[in-house]
Length: 215
Image (tube, rainbow, N blue to C red):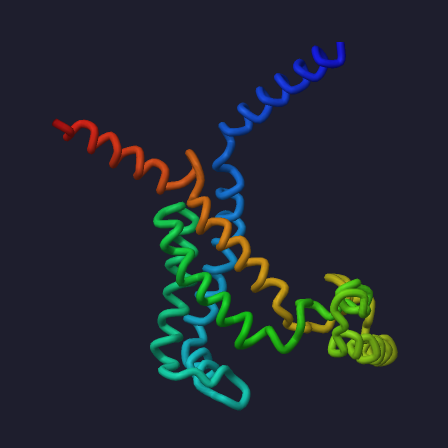
């Protein structure tokens, strides 16, 4: 009896997982749909402030201090703008991921690494309370944020200032860049996705043409 119930449950599970394979391209599509506007916006911002971007790449004191800043700025803008558009279409997905992964690694280690993990200085986070990652920078933000709120409550229209959301302190840690990096690594291994990417239909067309031309 138990064996029959187990076999029946296993058979249903197998049918369920087989049905899910029809939607195997959805996760990659959702990753692309999330990443594309983020990358396009980042590239567009750099393009709009090109001189400032070059200066930030070049300056060793308050910037990155990188060599050939004009070339690197152009490459970064091209990677994010063109890469974001190609990701949106699901074209050359794996190739596009390579320069974007490099861009994220540069951002992580050159910009965000000294600031720890958290993007926002959330002093209530278990990542900042010493349980896993003791971040003095984030913990110090508690007092500063409390002082800022007190000043605004006394001298400003605090309700109006916070009507669009709570006041926060930007910590600028690696959280977002690391998340984007993991998403790009996933797309590097999976590709653009079944049915919902230009890569999939291009491959089908190329395979069909090759079959038709085969002797």
